[in-house]
Structures are given as C-alpha cells and as structure tokens.
Amino acid sequence: MASASAQPAALSAEQAKVVLAEVIQAFSAPENAVRMDEARDNACNDMGKMLQFVLPVATQIQQEVIKAYGFSCDGEGVLKFARLVKSYEAQDPEIASLSGKLKALFLPPMMLPPHGPAAGGSVAAS
Image (cartoon, rainbow, N blue to C red; front, side, top):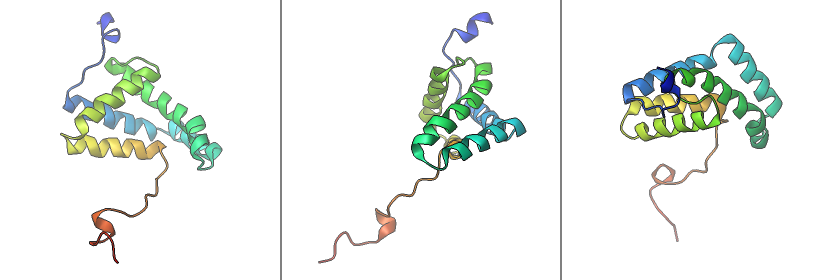
C-alpha cells in the first residue's frame, strides 16, 4: 500500500462522488468554515484577492481530503482531482451537481450578460 501514493489516483465515478461529498463536507467543518470566512473577508469580493486569499485555503482543505485517495498533497494533486471530476461531469449529473456545489464554496457568483435562447426568440430587430 506504500506505493499507492506514488501511483496516480484513478477513481471510478462512484468513488469520485464519495470523495466530492467528503470534500464538500470538509468545507463545513467549523475550523475550515472559519478559515474560509477569514479568507473571503480578506478578499473583499475582488477576484484578484480571491485568487490570493481564498483559493489557497480552498486548495488546502481539498488536499487534506484527497490525499487519502492517492492524490499528491500539493496543488498538482488538486488539479488532477479536478480533471478527474471534470471527466465524469458530462456523463453523471450527480457528479456535475456536486462539482458545482464545490466550486460555489470558493468561487464568487459570476453575473453573465443575458444571451442565447433565454434572452429572447429574435436574433435582431430591424
């Protein structure tokens, strides 16, 4: 089992759901909630500061969970986990939902301008 951490983590879709749920749960642990609140307060809803303050804390919280599943305990491990989750999102709506919940925990809501079918039926009015 010692070589498990040296091997790239390969999780099934079901395992990915379990890990995602554990990561989301880790964000609600009291000590992590405090860490995230402090980081958000420091960021003041500024995207540059979010990257500087919030993202590192969110990455650390994820690392603490995913290292138990064979991912390296660094930024690369988090990126590999994110890529794995992304690969399952299109085929599994539950994973897509959990992934969205996780992102919402550390990314500010983005306001997109209305466009596409929801914005109206006609393309241009002359």
